[in-house]
Image (cartoon, rainbow, N blue to C red; front, side):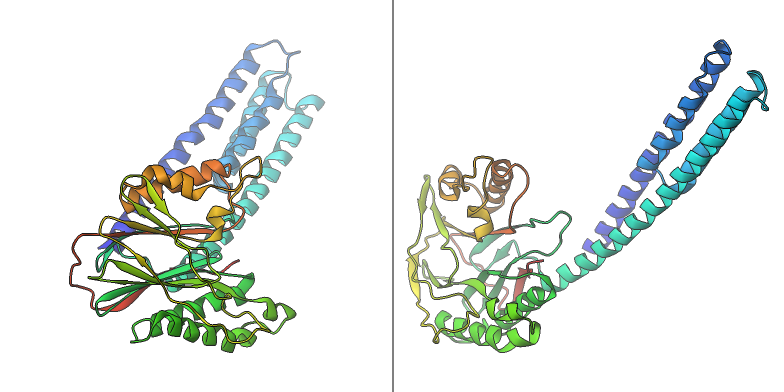
Length: 389
């Protein structure tokens, strides 16, 4: 049903785009008529014909090479009509104007064709990126176990589908486990590392092991496959921060194990924001260190509370005066909001703070504990992730 709806929406968008471009095509055609009529009504020593080049010059901004060629041909035809009624086609001035307009129109058609080809290539790249995103990034559910969930991913790069942050949620028995992380590095190797990290989490999170033991499994996966991902010198510098969270259905607590990742914020009704004090171990995949000891931290997580997970792209976003985004201060005014509304407020406020453009990828997850824990989704994994491009 969703696929059909997306397809219908795409058809409607294409139809509206087609209508818009054809409506705009009337503008250069009308401009040609106005210039031609005005030139014919003015004295012969006043030449408005050169202004006809404006019409084909405008057309590539909203139409393709065929429409540009059509408008260019109409402009040349209008120039020929002007020449016939103002001194004849054989005058040097009119010959120069016709030839110049023809050459410029041809150049504009070539420009439009090149632009159209590059646009098609970009659309193909976006399509491939979107396909990779759907393979790597599974959308988070709106409800899983006792939790209502809302998430946000903002890529720092324009038109990017895949960035440097990752997150995933899995349901196992009577608890929910969550992973949020940030892969260091760029290129295909970083994308591969993010995919391996997500795959390892989805495969192991349902097992009857503690979060520190799960962190060891993820550490082994990252370390074991790092050399295969990239044989360059940067392979030794590849690592990923990660925060593992476990939320039981019936116990009003949350268990956390941090591998170099920023701690979450606990939002309670009444503008109360708590920053849990974690005991983080080094990030996953750091070379040259002994096997880290992962700590399990336990905190209260009552019904009605919201746990806000984020990556450092949020808190390290800077404004025009190079000030970091004060996440804890800003969210204090939205503690009574639903997860969806909370994420919406943060997105708008964060982009306003950063001037509409982030310097790093940013990801957020809002987990709201509902009073009752529905018994469904016994097993399975859902997630969303990416790697730094």
